[in-house]
Amino acid sequence: MEIKTAKNALINVNQLCERYGVTRYFIRMASRDLGFPAPLKLGKINFYISEEIDKWIESLPRRSGRRARDARLDEGQRNYIAARKNKRAA
Image (tube, rainbow, N blue to C red; front, side, top):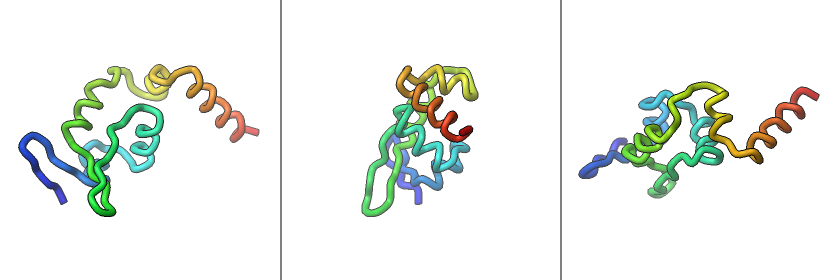
């Protein structure tokens, strides 16, 4: 269900994933680590404002891949990721 307002469209998680080519896991990770816009909760369903998502995407550095993600993380977050990798390897 897509609800249009004057400037924005409210889209649910499935539409967000389809429109932007991301997964639900990415949305959770980006919300936690990368400042992804918070959803609006209407009843039991989370909606996102498409204009906020577009602005967030525009604010990202133009690099891609793991190095780009690591460049946006602070030292504590990098240490956390490194510890998780080491834990999996052990």
